[in-house]
Image 1 (cartoon, rainbow, N blue to C red):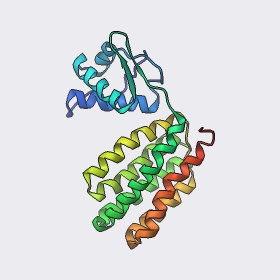
Image 2: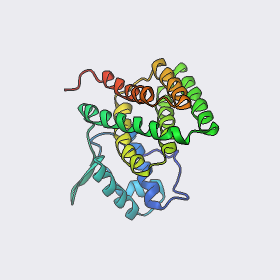
Image 3: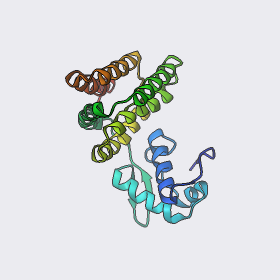
Image 4: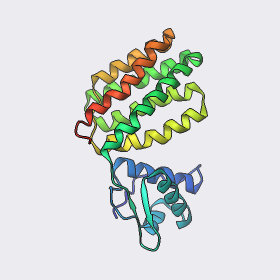
Length: 218
């Protein structure tokens, strides 16, 4: 099982938290491939932790649907189900729109400036055809809005959906375009003006349009 060596070792987080975050990211971006068998001893050595936090992390990942554990046999990464995008994006779009609506009342100059600079980085990534980076920056853009909504329950649900959407995007080489840059600009302007109805529609469309990039889902 090939394991990258250029990753961050667990630092301020607990060993379990750090191991979980790293393993989840490796599954999302395909470092650990669908169907790949996982060796907890190798992972423990690679991450510089004992096998206990690795095993605990794998249990959490199984609960999320990222790995399957067969006691006494093996643990392996789950397959990527393209058709699940139709179940994931509609609720995520609604929750993202709700977050934007709630964030309006908490908008300030610093948050708006951060959104604008993030969208500039997003545009640079798209124009330079660094689509992997663009996907990550797009997540950061929406995360700023979710954080501004200041609702931990909505944030937790969005995060649980987002990780699965991210995995589908990475494994299907989804390419975000100029359209997304313009959507972000519009969202920023609507957050400034406080136009709830238009903001709600724009935010949902920004997410739901991506379903069209999965034309062959059954």
